[in-house]
Image (cartoon, rainbow, N blue to C red; front, top):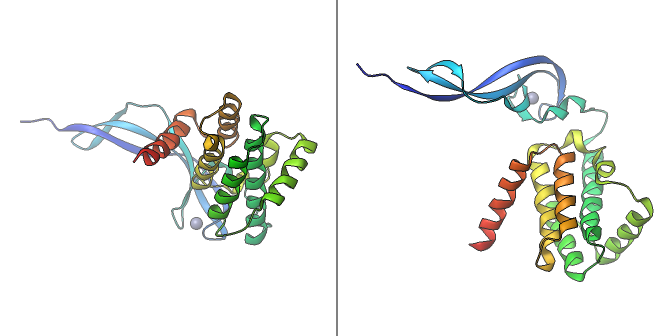
Length: 212
Ligand SMILES: [Zn+2]
Protein backbone atom coordinates (compact mmCIF):
# COMPACT_ATOMS: atom_id res chain seq x y z
CA UNK A 1 0.00 0.00 0.00
CA UNK A 2 1.06 3.56 -0.39
CA UNK A 3 0.67 6.47 1.95
CA UNK A 4 -0.73 9.70 0.56
CA UNK A 5 0.29 12.79 2.49
CA UNK A 6 0.44 16.50 1.83
CA UNK A 7 -0.41 19.93 3.19
CA UNK A 8 -3.53 22.04 3.10
CA UNK A 9 -4.36 25.60 4.20
CA UNK A 10 -7.33 25.65 6.54
CA UNK A 11 -9.32 28.69 7.61
CA UNK A 12 -10.05 28.44 11.31
CA UNK A 13 -12.74 30.56 12.89
CA UNK A 14 -11.93 32.27 16.17
CA UNK A 15 -14.81 34.69 16.59
CA UNK A 16 -18.05 35.82 15.03
CA UNK A 17 -20.53 38.65 15.28
CA UNK A 18 -22.35 41.27 13.26
CA UNK A 19 -20.82 43.96 11.11
CA UNK A 20 -21.76 46.27 8.30
CA UNK A 21 -20.52 44.45 5.20
CA UNK A 22 -19.26 47.07 2.71
CA UNK A 23 -20.14 44.76 -0.19
CA UNK A 24 -23.67 43.76 0.92
CA UNK A 25 -24.08 47.26 2.36
CA UNK A 26 -26.25 45.93 5.20
CA UNK A 27 -25.68 44.38 8.60
CA UNK A 28 -24.50 40.79 8.21
CA UNK A 29 -22.96 38.00 10.24
CA UNK A 30 -19.20 37.64 10.01
CA UNK A 31 -16.66 35.04 10.95
CA UNK A 32 -13.20 36.06 12.16
CA UNK A 33 -10.70 33.57 10.83
CA UNK A 34 -7.04 32.85 10.44
CA UNK A 35 -5.32 30.54 8.01
CA UNK A 36 -3.02 27.73 9.04
CA UNK A 37 -1.22 25.07 6.99
CA UNK A 38 -1.94 21.50 8.11
CA UNK A 39 -0.19 18.24 7.44
CA UNK A 40 -2.67 15.87 5.78
CA UNK A 41 -2.80 12.10 5.53
CA UNK A 42 -5.14 10.76 2.86
CA UNK A 43 -6.49 14.32 2.61
CA UNK A 44 -7.39 14.40 6.31
CA UNK A 45 -5.75 17.26 8.26
CA UNK A 46 -3.70 15.70 11.05
CA UNK A 47 -1.73 18.51 12.71
CA UNK A 48 -0.81 22.14 12.00
CA UNK A 49 2.61 22.82 10.51
CA UNK A 50 2.56 26.61 10.34
CA UNK A 51 1.75 29.52 12.60
CA UNK A 52 -1.53 31.35 12.51
CA UNK A 53 -1.54 33.78 9.61
CA UNK A 54 -3.78 36.13 7.63
CA UNK A 55 -6.24 37.13 10.33
CA UNK A 56 -9.33 38.22 8.43
CA UNK A 57 -13.06 38.82 8.53
CA UNK A 58 -15.36 36.94 6.21
CA UNK A 59 -18.94 37.95 5.45
CA UNK A 60 -21.19 34.90 5.83
CA UNK A 61 -23.56 36.19 3.18
CA UNK A 62 -21.34 37.25 0.26
CA UNK A 63 -18.10 35.58 1.46
CA UNK A 64 -16.12 38.78 0.88
CA UNK A 65 -12.89 38.83 2.81
CA UNK A 66 -11.78 41.91 4.68
CA UNK A 67 -9.03 43.21 6.86
CA UNK A 68 -9.99 42.93 10.55
CA UNK A 69 -10.38 46.75 10.66
CA UNK A 70 -13.69 46.34 8.79
CA UNK A 71 -15.45 45.76 12.12
CA UNK A 72 -14.94 49.47 12.82
CA UNK A 73 -16.65 50.34 9.53
CA UNK A 74 -19.45 52.79 10.20
CA UNK A 75 -22.23 52.80 7.62
CA UNK A 76 -23.01 56.42 8.53
CA UNK A 77 -20.41 57.43 5.97
CA UNK A 78 -21.75 57.43 2.41
CA UNK A 79 -19.89 56.17 -0.63
CA UNK A 80 -19.22 59.74 -1.71
CA UNK A 81 -17.86 60.69 1.69
CA UNK A 82 -15.67 57.62 1.69
CA UNK A 83 -14.36 58.41 -1.76
CA UNK A 84 -13.53 61.96 -0.79
CA UNK A 85 -11.83 60.80 2.43
CA UNK A 86 -9.76 58.29 0.44
CA UNK A 87 -8.77 60.96 -2.06
CA UNK A 88 -7.82 63.39 0.71
CA UNK A 89 -5.72 60.73 2.44
CA UNK A 90 -4.07 59.78 -0.85
CA UNK A 91 -3.17 63.41 -1.59
CA UNK A 92 -1.68 63.84 1.87
CA UNK A 93 0.43 60.67 1.92
CA UNK A 94 1.74 61.27 -1.59
CA UNK A 95 2.75 64.82 -0.65
CA UNK A 96 4.31 63.53 2.57
CA UNK A 97 6.48 61.32 0.37
CA UNK A 98 7.53 64.34 -1.72
CA UNK A 99 8.64 65.98 1.51
CA UNK A 100 10.35 62.90 2.98
CA UNK A 101 13.82 63.74 1.66
CA UNK A 102 13.29 67.48 2.36
CA UNK A 103 13.66 68.31 -1.33
CA UNK A 104 10.62 69.08 -3.46
CA UNK A 105 11.52 67.97 -6.96
CA UNK A 106 9.73 68.50 -10.26
CA UNK A 107 9.79 64.76 -11.08
CA UNK A 108 8.15 63.99 -7.78
CA UNK A 109 5.41 66.54 -8.35
CA UNK A 110 4.59 65.30 -11.84
CA UNK A 111 4.67 61.66 -10.61
CA UNK A 112 2.19 62.52 -7.84
CA UNK A 113 -0.05 64.30 -10.32
CA UNK A 114 0.00 61.31 -12.73
CA UNK A 115 -0.47 58.63 -10.10
CA UNK A 116 -3.31 60.48 -8.42
CA UNK A 117 -4.99 60.82 -11.80
CA UNK A 118 -4.66 57.07 -12.46
CA UNK A 119 -5.82 55.95 -9.03
CA UNK A 120 -8.91 58.15 -8.96
CA UNK A 121 -10.38 57.57 -12.41
CA UNK A 122 -9.04 60.72 -13.97
CA UNK A 123 -9.37 63.23 -11.16
CA UNK A 124 -6.95 66.14 -11.27
CA UNK A 125 -4.28 67.00 -8.73
CA UNK A 126 -2.48 69.90 -10.39
CA UNK A 127 0.99 71.23 -9.63
CA UNK A 128 -0.63 74.27 -8.06
CA UNK A 129 -2.84 72.12 -5.81
CA UNK A 130 0.15 69.95 -4.90
CA UNK A 131 2.14 73.06 -3.91
CA UNK A 132 -0.72 74.18 -1.68
CA UNK A 133 -1.06 70.72 -0.15
CA UNK A 134 2.67 70.66 0.62
CA UNK A 135 2.47 74.07 2.30
CA UNK A 136 -0.43 72.79 4.42
CA UNK A 137 1.47 69.62 5.42
CA UNK A 138 4.46 71.69 6.51
CA UNK A 139 2.13 73.75 8.70
CA UNK A 140 0.25 70.72 10.14
CA UNK A 141 3.35 68.68 10.99
CA UNK A 142 1.15 65.56 11.30
CA UNK A 143 2.32 61.97 10.96
CA UNK A 144 1.25 59.53 8.28
CA UNK A 145 -0.79 57.73 10.95
CA UNK A 146 -2.89 60.85 11.54
CA UNK A 147 -3.57 61.30 7.83
CA UNK A 148 -4.69 57.70 7.40
CA UNK A 149 -6.57 57.27 10.65
CA UNK A 150 -10.03 58.19 9.41
CA UNK A 151 -9.99 56.21 6.19
CA UNK A 152 -8.03 53.18 7.42
CA UNK A 153 -11.00 51.02 8.49
CA UNK A 154 -12.50 51.37 5.01
CA UNK A 155 -9.42 50.28 3.10
CA UNK A 156 -9.28 46.72 1.82
CA UNK A 157 -5.96 45.03 1.15
CA UNK A 158 -6.04 46.13 -2.52
CA UNK A 159 -6.30 49.79 -1.47
CA UNK A 160 -3.49 49.31 1.02
CA UNK A 161 -1.21 47.83 -1.64
CA UNK A 162 -2.07 50.66 -4.05
CA UNK A 163 -1.09 53.28 -1.49
CA UNK A 164 2.27 51.59 -0.90
CA UNK A 165 2.91 51.19 -4.63
CA UNK A 166 1.99 54.83 -5.33
CA UNK A 167 4.27 56.07 -2.55
CA UNK A 168 7.09 53.90 -3.86
CA UNK A 169 6.70 55.37 -7.35
CA UNK A 170 6.90 58.90 -5.95
CA UNK A 171 9.91 58.06 -3.78
CA UNK A 172 11.84 56.48 -6.65
CA UNK A 173 10.84 59.04 -9.29
CA UNK A 174 14.17 60.86 -8.92
CA UNK A 175 16.01 57.61 -9.64
CA UNK A 176 16.73 56.34 -6.16
CA UNK A 177 15.04 55.53 -2.88
CA UNK A 178 16.37 57.84 -0.20
CA UNK A 179 16.77 56.47 3.36
CA UNK A 180 14.08 58.81 4.72
CA UNK A 181 11.76 57.80 1.89
CA UNK A 182 12.27 54.12 2.69
CA UNK A 183 11.50 54.85 6.32
CA UNK A 184 8.27 56.64 5.46
CA UNK A 185 7.27 53.76 3.21
CA UNK A 186 7.78 51.20 5.99
CA UNK A 187 6.06 53.44 8.52
CA UNK A 188 3.02 53.72 6.24
CA UNK A 189 2.97 49.96 5.74
CA UNK A 190 3.08 49.61 9.50
CA UNK A 191 0.13 51.99 9.94
CA UNK A 192 -1.75 49.98 7.30
CA UNK A 193 -0.87 46.79 9.21
CA UNK A 194 1.03 45.24 6.34
CA UNK A 195 3.98 43.03 7.30
CA UNK A 196 7.41 43.86 5.89
CA UNK A 197 7.31 40.55 3.97
CA UNK A 198 4.04 41.65 2.35
CA UNK A 199 5.52 45.04 1.40
CA UNK A 200 8.66 43.43 0.00
CA UNK A 201 6.46 41.13 -2.09
CA UNK A 202 4.47 44.08 -3.46
CA UNK A 203 7.63 46.04 -4.32
CA UNK A 204 9.42 43.02 -5.82
CA UNK A 205 6.43 42.59 -8.12
CA UNK A 206 6.75 46.24 -9.19
CA UNK A 207 10.50 45.95 -9.85
CA UNK A 208 9.90 42.85 -11.94
CA UNK A 209 7.36 44.75 -14.06
CA UNK A 210 9.73 47.71 -14.47
CA UNK A 211 12.58 45.50 -15.64
CA UNK A 212 10.48 43.69 -18.22
ZN1 LIG B 1 -21.31 40.67 2.52
